Length: 224
Image 1: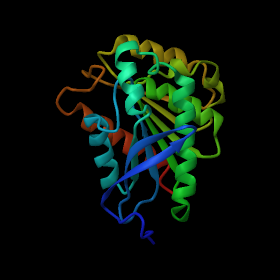
Image 2: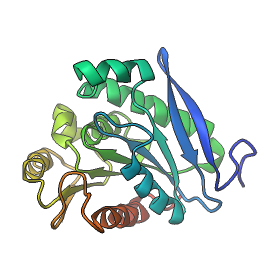
Image 3: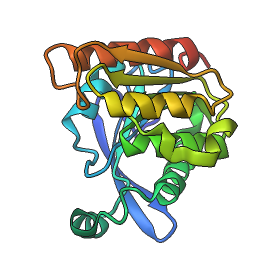
């Protein structure tokens, strides 16, 4: 039964505390939601990412709640656009993601949602670090054009079933994903989307990513 605070099928702006800052997000809970997917955006992006919103809509149609949130505050974002000092600070990003995961488990406790993570670019690395540190909370991970290599020494500690999706034309990132996979013990899978570049901007490619992600979450995150 849905809580009065979050009416079904309406996008709710939320503010999530993390240490000494507050992170803005969009929460959407379908009437028959069976799990929640937290989006971890890449460098220079935000909760307004059109690509992540597209994937989120597909997941909503598949009865998943979704949370898109900003990893950086507006002030940090202004600084980062000039210095780029935050976007590759994977430990900072992962610590904020962990705070968001904890917020979900507390704020949405009556739903008892399994939690999935959908990371993009550098967000893929942050998602893996967070999952390694909080294995009991993360049921599944999908990385889109991600940088799992940035998770470094945390890679062998990831327990959640992990799917790495990379564009077939994104050769450098394919290599980085393969190198990361070799260090992971959770038997990750690599899915290469033929003809797609890093942002999956080619016709039909992002739709393919969204459906692959939904199928992965159905497999590992769709039951309570």
